[in-house]
Length: 354
Image 1 (cartoon, helix red, strand yellow):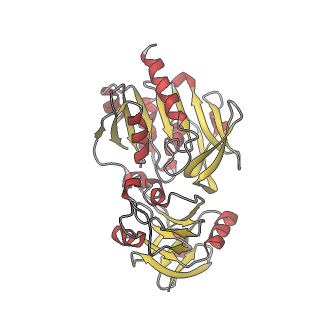
Image 2 (cartoon, helix red, strand yellow):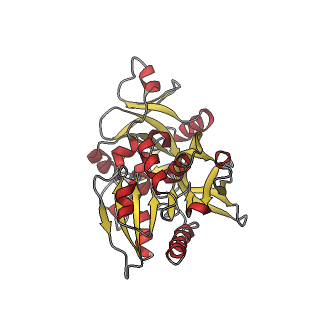
Image 3 (cartoon, one colour):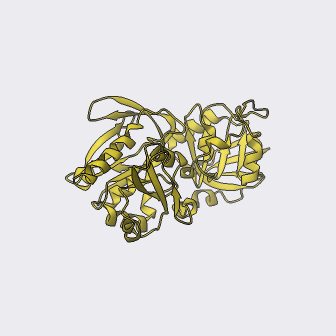
């Protein structure tokens, strides 16, 4: 028997899975019905204890081909963990991977109630433990620190284009998912991925055709160094910002961000396209949003969340820059918004022939 102790004092009993260690983290939930492998390996979950709203997890086993990064989450909560997976690509049960990565978790808990509490009261801290803490104040005092620095790559890395190289793209890695790189490679882009703290001057010296600002974990305001380097890049090359990259761009231009009550996490998040009124289903993983009103006169809002009307995209035509809060590369999730990469490539082509 082990416990999940919430910052509001609620306690859930369950059975241990994963590593036999106690761990503090920020409790969040994800609503995707598929794609648990991608969820486990998304660097944007750094510092968080992830609860799945879907009841059974692990039925396909461990699927390394679907990894989006290395496991960065701090804990894993499921209703039922499948002990005997069945899939021709499986490389073993999920529990063994959690143990190897040092990630603790619980199963056999009422995940519906955990999601309900988080939805009604908002994201809060939680503790996975074997013994109830003597001082619950330790849970409330926890804060995710050095999130981007903990997941960014350590050195510059080159990824060749698939087929004929048509363009060269610099990717600022704040915790980039692998499918961002693959999506660019499939479109004829050679990608140079840079550590998050790489100086703008050094990146621009290599004269890329465009720059992609990746997804990543944590509060965007915790990254003033990245914001300053982005500010130095804007207007120099076409820029595409994704998730955290979208938020950092807003801060670089003097805009504001706000923490959402419980965030958007899952592969079924509806977004309305303000250009044509269409609603698209997207993959998302974030707890903060851009305040579009803070960027009036600087950029224009392009997408809004169909549930809470928060900003899901911005466009800065004078700077050849577009940013989105959702994940056009998906993985997991639908491919409704993959055209964002094509829009970015069109921007690079237009700039090249201007």
